[in-house]
Image (cartoon, rainbow, N blue to C red; front, side):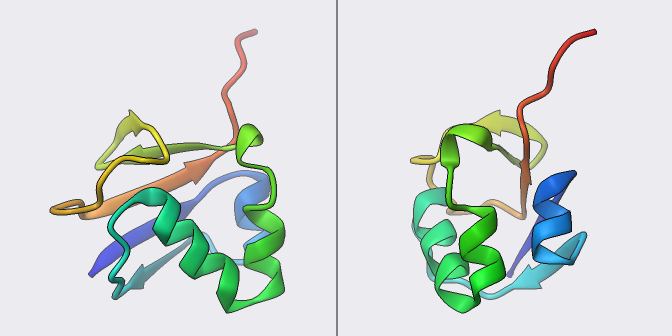
Length: 82
């Protein structure tokens, strides 16, 4: 099981702040493919990966990172300075 957290417009498009999933995904990209296949709202949220960032267990990561042993995956837009 993995906790998946959604922030900012990702949360708005999916309609959930978080969910706990059972997944066989090997990488973040595989997880995104699983989620996108569920419903259109997920496909919309993950349609442009250039506008997304991912953190695994609260550490910024890449989309090709393995999910083995990961307990939390968070998706969010890039952060901007001010």
